[in-house]
Amino acid sequence: MNPLSLQHNHLHLESADLVAIASTYSTPCYVYSHAALTQAFQDFDKALRGRNHLICYAMKANPNLAILNLFARLGAGFDIVSGGELQRVLAAGGDPGKVVFSGVGKTVEEIRLALDNGILCFNVESEAELLRLNEIAGTMNRIAPISLRVNPDVDANTHPYISTGLKGNKFGVAHEDALRLYRLAASLPHLKIKGIDCHIGSQLTETHPFADALDRVLTLVDALEADGIVLEHLDLGGGLGIRYQDETPPLIADYIDTLLAKLQGRTHTILLEPGRALVGNAGLLLTRVEYLKHGAEKNFAIVDAAMNDLMRPALYDAYHDIVPVVPRDDPKDIYEIVGPVCESGDFLGHARLLGLQQDDLLAILSAGAYGMSMSSNYNSRARAAEVMVNGRESFLIRERESTTDLFSLEHTLP
Ligand code: LLP
Image (tube, rainbow, N blue to C red):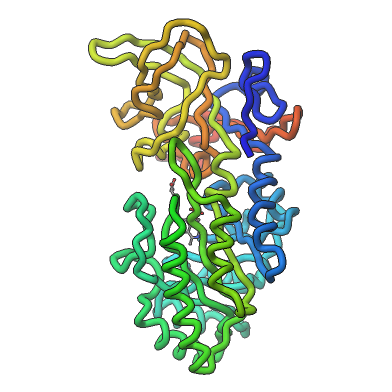
């Protein structure tokens, strides 16, 4: 669903006027749509109806407690990659029994925390991790539930920084090592094999890499079963892309149908780890024009959000649509939309045709995923506020940081 509409020449998210949101909460400010978040989750859930399944929200995309709590209430589990993320799940009222723990560098403390809280499964990414997990579980008198993250060596055709399923990536265990490592896991006394896991990358806009990866995983599942190793679940990872500009990613239902078609006759519980597809298009970053500057070669709109608030353009050259909150009839110019940070890489959009005046509000769209979660305090900039709208109502779900928050952990020398 698209929660955005123009009403009385003001951009609205659901029925909330973004001019009013900016005056209540100030800018820069992330704003999320409750309805769009709910709808995206339900699209996954409905498409999987009739199968045992668990949608484990990849919370790195946006770990705000209100968002976690909303998904938990809808029945979600969570894909975590750190002890900090597990603590957030607990603080948000999520069920640790529905948590899968991915990541190549789980520390001893993180493993202990996860075992103490009885998570559903560790997605193990190396032989060394398997051994460490067995040892720690032994000292705690626990059995660690595991699956191996296999690297299917499939090209996800996405940005190299967010492609994870190729042989050269640091993620998972090689397909050809998987059988040996499963046998090793089966021989270790403090591990219980629960499933198999695979995640090939992010912002995938085609279905076939998912299908190819699943074929590779199923070959292994069959080999394991022939070996007497029976799996309860298949975790097919996340990675479904969204539309930022003119991409045409598959619909959630079509993507899932493609997977389910390959799973006929199999009774495994299906786990998915979507992040971006659940939150990306449910959020925007609201910002105000501080200055217009007509340079020798380019026009600049200097806004109050910057690369520290949304680093995707600087880091991946990612495109985010930028639209006026109150469209004007004035003549348009081509603008570089930039922030106040002292780097030439601090841009939010290049060459955008907009009719602008100082103090205008802009909405940077598709910013719900990997926006706030990748933000920083670079240039001693306090992080933005976060707001959730539901119909006409709005709720502050993260306060704007204060400048003193930024150095509250620092000490001058005695
Ligand atoms: N599962 C695992 C093991 C992952 O590493 C990821 C994302 C996901 C699931 C969720 O993927 P999604 O459904 O969101 O595509 N910062 C980048 C994206 C990094 C993705 C990292 N892993 C960006 O802004 O595009």
